[in-house]
Image 1: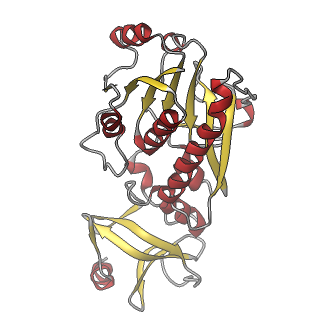
Image 2: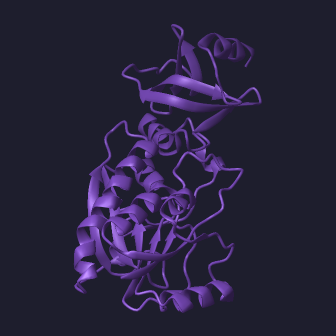
Image 3: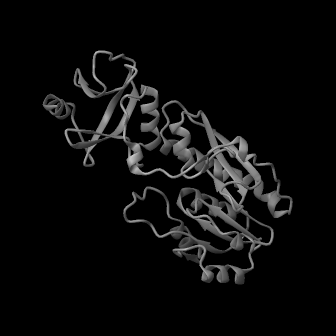
Length: 300
């Protein structure tokens, strides 16, 4: 099997290594240039390609005629997309003789679209996973080839869940590749009407609404905790980001919603009288001590 692979991030690295371990000929890898404005906490597909002597390119536009011609000349049996960030045009997918497949970070048909792990944590899901599916004109809408589930524990952050999903993606591809190589690719229905679709998230979406119940605020924190941009709030014109927190067992009905300091401990008081105990609060990337926050609150 000759493959052209679109890949980025940890899922891209691990799934690329699975293809190589299973004996797939990777003729070309298409990846992204790292964004200098983004925190790069994940592994490099380009470095993996250099290590294995695989050609790797980073075109700005996957719809370009030049890329289409380059892939057509390679005559790939299959095209894979592993956490590549752009939709691939149907004309490109049709160049693969036996099919084009994407690895998605959810249990399709739930959480189609962008940043599915963050959305799953935000919505308080207790399970997610990785799904290999056929690519189609609509995002994450093609037939399901295989999927693997992982748990989301009550205190898991999206970063921790992402680590589990990387392993699930590797396992999913590893187990189904022999059948695909033998020409017996399984195809299960992807009933998108029964699922959900979500768009991308921006740093400003992490702003905390302290009138919300504590569980909702905690889910927001977990969904965007570092290395993602973080859940944030503004006090006296200064932006504070929650680095680490847990749901507090104590009730705080006598305190107004928002940041608070009690017995030299920092809290985020929520609309239902419950709170998050904040173990790390950041301002300008530096940890804020309870005494500093107390002084600022006294001026409010």
